[in-house]
Length: 243
Length: 243
Image 1 (cartoon, chains in turn purple, red):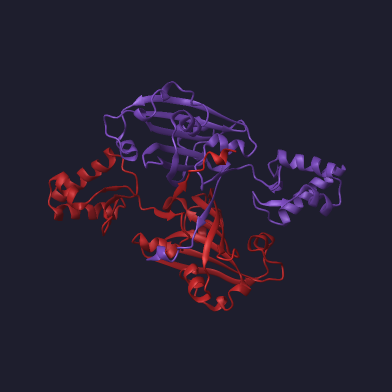
Image 2 (cartoon, rainbow over the protein chains, first blue to last red; image 1 turned 90 degrees about the vertical axis):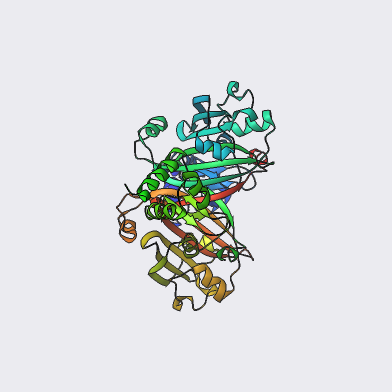
């Protein structure tokens, strides 16, 4: 067994025995090298192998170091963030494919969510998101067409939020969101290139601007095997919530 | 067909055609009775039938009325709230069964989460929550034993947060939480009385008090067929989060 292989095995044992959870910081490269009494270069080669298996992830910078990983994308629920940014920040390449883009009359639920009447057309787009060359999510966004003139001829294969913010001056204030677990039907399975019945996280979201106008009504499906939601809940008033 | 049955069918059609989402307000009883041109008493009998099927839910009070429903329990993620309160507020009875309660040495992940060393014992409890006579979740809570003396002999078949707050003066400040979708293994299936492979929402949570001490490390599994997460995300700074 080479020195790298030996260190790799010791790292695997360290991760397992200490029950590190994905996203947890294992330590700095320097501290790990000292702990295992190996050189930084041998440690790095071992870490590279584990990184290829998504067992660890290395991050640069002040809060960087070696983190336990399982390859899932962390979706932070405390801020409204577009999928491409979210994926890129975790070191993966990202791509968006537009499956459908249409101007249409709103369905009743779309009218209620966007607070528009039946004469107000909507732009409806269905897109598949890729992260690191595999599918991540299937997203449907419905927008009030009059609010975003010319959007139909824009390029929607990137961040919709970036486009709406930069081209239309949208100021996102908040989003109301629900999350449920469900399984992929035949159509979703095909578009996400996963077996039918695979686990999905189903999200409904209405995004509001600073003037409290509903700007987007979204219905997204994230692959359960690739997604973890992360959030901070504020609980100072938990007692009040019992009344 | 009786008058009630006829009204019941019209209500079903109204819910379906308008694509009401669970939790959405359909209207007041008065407005619905006027819309369908029926008496309040006939409407109520029809609503009672739909309520028994979890297609609608009626709520009293100013923000009350008739709501579309699917029988799922809404878990609000913006505040830290115990399961019994959450269930009761949605009009269902609730029960907690303690499957395990032990004083033990902490596992490595418990030590890191609670920021204690290996000599500090923990109280570990596994409980099943019931809502409306069926299982809802399987919850494991780990607490630093020295912080909560005598907890082992307390009654844990209610809200743990209520107990910690009222008996130990705990002031919950915030919780860090992750949510993933997974499926039930044989053990979980048995305890939750569901088929193996059923969908579950898996939650890890660390709850902190006002002094930033970790007070609880929790690992919960909620039945996917009975749970919807609901939250409000604040997005004013979404641009900042791209940097």
